[in-house]
Amino acid sequence: MQQASTAQPSAARALPFYTNGMRVGLLGGSFNPPHAAHRAISQFALKRLQLDRVWWLLTPGNPLKNHDGLRALAERAEAAQRVADDPRIDISCLEAVIGTRYTIDTIIQLRRRVAGVHFVWIMGADNLAQFHRWKDWRRIASDVPIAVIDRPPQSFRALAAPAAQALARYRLPENQATRLADQQAPAWVFLTGMKSKLSSTGLRNPDGSWRTA
Ligand SMILES: Nc1ncnc2c1ncn2[C@@H]1O[C@H](COP(=O)(O)OP(=O)(O)OP(=O)(O)O)[C@@H](O)[C@H]1O
Ligand SMILES: O=C(O)c1ccc[n+]([C@@H]2O[C@H](COP(=O)([O-])O)[C@@H](O)[C@H]2O)c1
Image 1: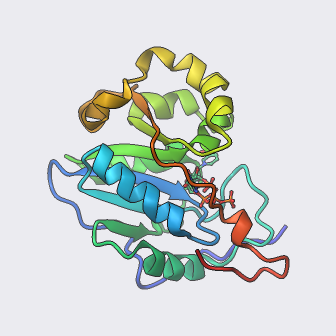
Image 2: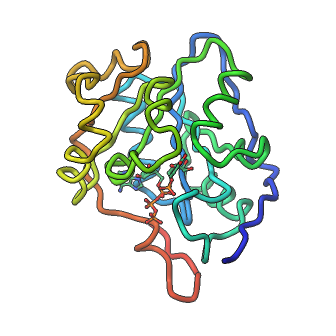
């Protein structure tokens, strides 16, 4: 298995700018490559959750994915800067800098470093479908409110999956999504209304080169 480089690109700050009371969405991901749906779901979350910022947390390597074909962090971060193209979206290589890979460890470290910020974890429905396989997923859900963005064809599978079932009583109605960032976890919302089938998988060529979208 290929080991992804963890060199930090100069453009990406480990901890983006924040101020007391800010509402920040955390979109963890491989971004291999980043694409227009990453930007679209970030802008959708900014609006629907009334966030001030979304930070794209570029993973050094998703613990559940094979890393063959995973481009160097610096390359993914540079592409992410170009694709994000919104002053409210920040690119961060925090996990590579502090040495975390599991989301629970990242959240614990973030809470130690950053006080006074209302964080929300953002994920596509494909990740809710397998959230029960993440390390300490129940603790993640107890530590940070979660916004799930619908992602066809995963909607039904995601909502029927073990984590969604186990956390059902903590789900906010979608029309109360603006309250999520102020909620004590566990709390989560499933956001519909943005449906994109775009994926990084669909943009990777067999030779490892990327198409853009
Ligand atoms: N089209 C989309 N709709 C909703 N969520 C998405 C979409 N694309 C990516 N996401 C979410 O963005 C986050 C980062 O995604 P990631 O970088 O893995 O891209 P991806 O397109 O899912 O990649 P891959 O095809 O390699 O699995 C994940 O939570 C993922 O669910
Ligand atoms: O902590 C875990 O066990 C865990 C397992 C799978 C995925 N994650 C995180 O989920 C985010 C989305 O990953 P990806 O590859 O689907 O973009 C990214 O931040 C990963 O580190 C985390």
